[in-house]
Image (cartoon, rainbow, N blue to C red):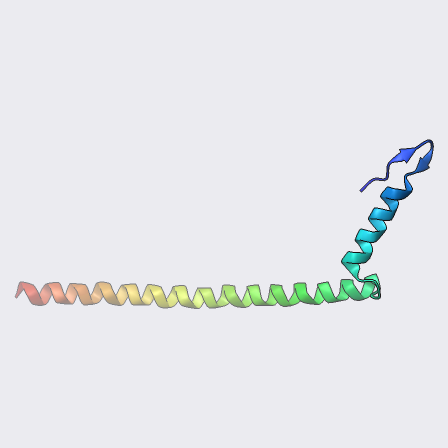
Length: 84
């Protein structure tokens, strides 16, 4: 965000809006570092959940592949039995 310059000085209204936005995003009584640490912890938790979901998805894909192979095998067995 850039401040608007009027007559060689910063527009106080724009600076005020920026400060109010920062205060509302951060929280009036929370220091920036505390909020940063909380967001960092949330990010780490989200990334760990993502990694866990990827691993679980790999397991499910493997089970699906095995189930499809079993279905193919059973269909072949059914076809062989119906031919006889």
